[in-house]
Image (cartoon, rainbow, N blue to C red):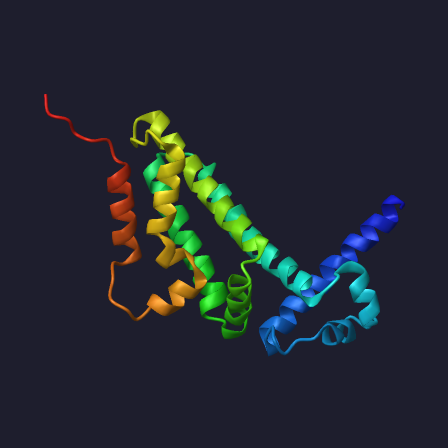
Amino acid sequence: MTLIQEHSETDTRERILVVAERLFRQIGYQKTTVADIAKELRMSPANVYRFFDSKKSIHEGVARGLMGEVEIEAQRIARSEGPAAPRLRQMMTTINRMNTERYVGDSKLHEMVEVAMQEDWDVCVAHMECIAAIIGEVIAQGAASGEFEAPDLQLASLCACTAMMRFFHPQMIAQCATKPGPTIDQMIDFVIAGLSPRVRAN
């Protein structure tokens, strides 16, 4: 395969994903068919299947793109300058904001996420592991500077992610929006307090 052919195939895959995401948003994941996507692109369903072997794989590609944008923003915050605690706070509020805007405010996209979570797709698991790793990166930086105390960095990042699940997981964000509980700032305060160095008596 030539470089031009590879570039053309990459462009076609991207076009399929862009159109699929638009249709998922407009008419919903369940109602959208591969034939609908093909019609929008003025190509045959068989041609779509050359690039994606099923509707599920198209859905995974769309989900991967949406989750990837959250990961990129989290990475940007993790690698910015300044103390660890404010960056951890900014990262956690950003993840919450992006997931709320994308999935909770958009019922059609929320349906897509529900299907992904129910089927426990690898893309969802990989995203959660990636977010935990990025949070772990900031905790490690804070531990190195003395700002945090975290003897087991992996455990610290898992605990922080678990504590924030209500604010990270699209379904839980929606389900917990009207239920009593701590605000996101209160929860982040709790996580940061748990990471802060212990004051030891002489």
